Amino acid sequence: MLHINAIKALKNKRKIVMLTAYEYITAFLLEKAKVDIILVGDSLGMVFQGRKETIPVTVEDMIYHTKAVKRGAPDTFVITDMPFMSYQASVADAVRNAGKIIKQSGANAVKIEGGKEIIPQVKAVIGIGVPVMGHIGLQPQSVKKYGGYPVMGKTEDEEKELIENARALEKAGVFAITLEKVKASAAAKITKAVSVPVIGIGSGAKCDGQVLVTHDMLGFFPDFTPKFVKKYDNLGPRALKAIVKFSDDVKSGKFPSKKQSY
Image 1 (cartoon, rainbow, N blue to C red):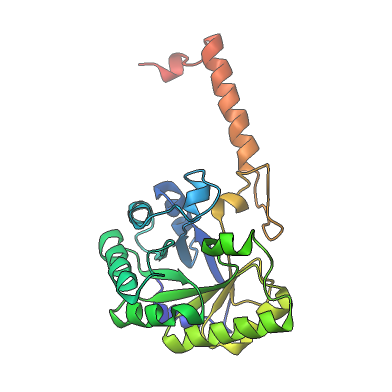
Image 2 (spheres, one colour):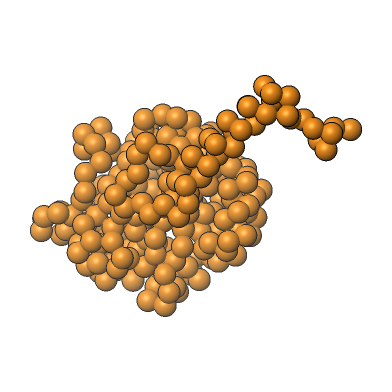
């Protein structure tokens, strides 16, 4: 298993691979594939729970799913998202909930969305011994403020603000930063501006690594694919075809055959 110093040491050496998991079997496969980091994202609210956004996800949700992921991938570095309102209100909330997540779930680190405005929380969480990955650019927990999911870093002012946030997080002690949906040219500058790895999602090829939602990458959602997602398979339609075939076999009496009977 990589540790935070090993992850930091990968910057400028090779690209870092991170994918999401919310349950045992996906985590098991990701570990078999030897991905560097598994993220138990609060995206589980959309992918696993069928919600329209991540905001309703709770600390208990994150703990439950991280436990399952750790069973499937005990030897992979696992990061768990701190969900909406688990850290924003106060430093005390941040410390309490980060400690709870690490203690009860077995996660190796937490990820916190935000820049300069949440530096006190980041410092306090690191101060109790919990490694923190930062998250800037598009912040899904702020979707109501944005009114959607816009591309970030499109202007000089936005680019400057992102660089300032990245440097503030680095100074606070984060071991890495996720950079979401940022204009590629801005993302390249942000990546160079800090000494910790910057892992991009929809932020171009110049980041130190890449992360995608595994279910997007595997093609489970045929109705919508974000621009930044490359589908490496098309499992949604394939799974649907198999389910329909099973249904037809049951109705026609083809299943179970003697081979599947005792």
